[in-house]
Length: 470
Image (tube, rainbow, N blue to C red; front, side):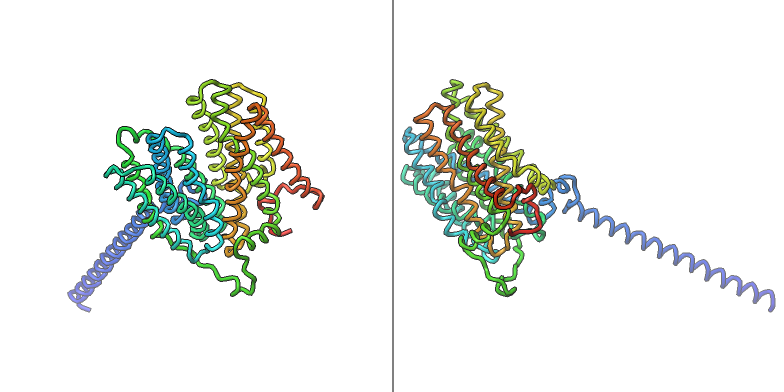
């Protein structure tokens, strides 16, 4: 080959290698840019849905976006509802200055739930929980908007307030079971159900702590219309959150060849046969009856023993609320099963100890500690029992189970208030606390003793045992 042709071939080969190297560099740069874009999108997605934060790791329910959305709306709406209820009380007191009228108002707010809840709860299921919740929210929003308009037009007379309270009571009796049924059916993971129910209790306690204070602070300078408008805003936000929720579907039990336990009778059959429910639902009722009675006795104790009802009533209720909040926070954590397995049998006895301390001691520190223990006991037993029963029950039995639990634990509390008031009317205050302590001790001894006689042992792991039925 002539030298000229050889140099020409060499130049073409060099040019080809240069073009190949340039193409490879361009390909590598393109791949790097694409990888960086993907990583950037992943980081943005991670910021939007932070499911691996330390908070979510501690509270498993918060890993679910639907549960977070529900709890956010729940907290906002309950805060507004407490503001509405307290504002109604302040208005009735301002108009009448009669404690009896306050009693009538609060009976209209809380009394209908004793009749409405047992009628509504057994008819709730995963298929209609969201729809019923939406209708109840719309009706409650109408009541709040009507009160806001009445405040602006100066139409807040006593009959109007009583009518609004009655509507609020009926809707409240439907609201509690429908929201709870919605909560237990929006999480795709049943293992986080106990944490979700406990976190719902935390949200309720926080709203109950802040709502009355905000209503009292705003009542004089801003007027009742402001509280009613904020309540309407909270309900509207909850409505927005519920619209975006998606309820998981369950196969009807007949499709699985199983009988469907429905209504209160089906829930009662489940609880009666369930090894956990047959013991701890009666325990929860005993705690609600004896420990829940402290609310009526707090103002009496603050006035008779400490001489300043206005000052010490707030302190004692704050101590009880703090104890209840601590219990709910612990049960909403990832240690739920461990806490229930180790302490659920023992915590009811702390109520006996706290009532006994209140019966014999008039020291401020001991009294505050006793009320904190009473709040902890009520919240731990009620929330732990409710969460565990819902995890163990089949989905089709949960509607009746909600009604049964509310009747057993919440429904006995009005009778507890009546019992404690009658005892305090005829007995010294210390003797009243002593009677309540003896009643609770007797009930726990009878319930635990009956289980011991039947099985020859008292199981400490009932809350998380694998076998559901005895």
